Length: 135
Image 1 (cartoon, one colour):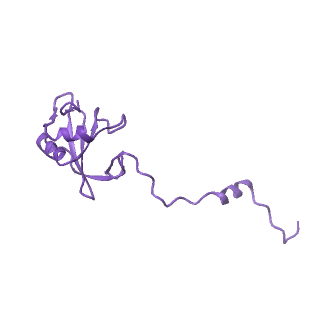
Image 2 (cartoon, one colour):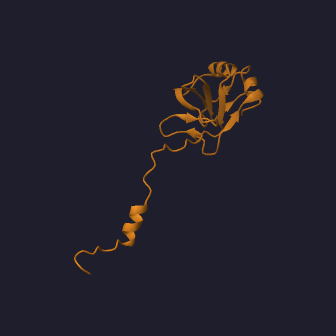
Image 3 (cartoon, helix red, strand yellow):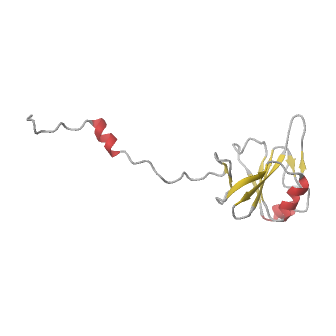
């Protein structure tokens, strides 16, 4: 080969030159807790935590005002899935005060979350019973 000829690229160099540039698009949101501390519902609405534990009377009032109600029955953070209470079942909960257990073995909680659009979500975790719908 003369001094003017070029060496052919190696296979590794060819592969490296064809790699796609990293995407600048944000990753799609999954339902549930996000790494940034927010919570995303089934419709993609993003909620921020207002209070991690409210009492039954405030939960009932929020339900009566139309809050989205989500139950994490075992308190695992949603790994086993969430139960979504909506429609007629959710409206019924606005007329009943939930029971939130706080025992040695189980601790229930109702977290109050709010979206930037002003909608409210109640996240019920573990030992919560509420009407005939939950618990």
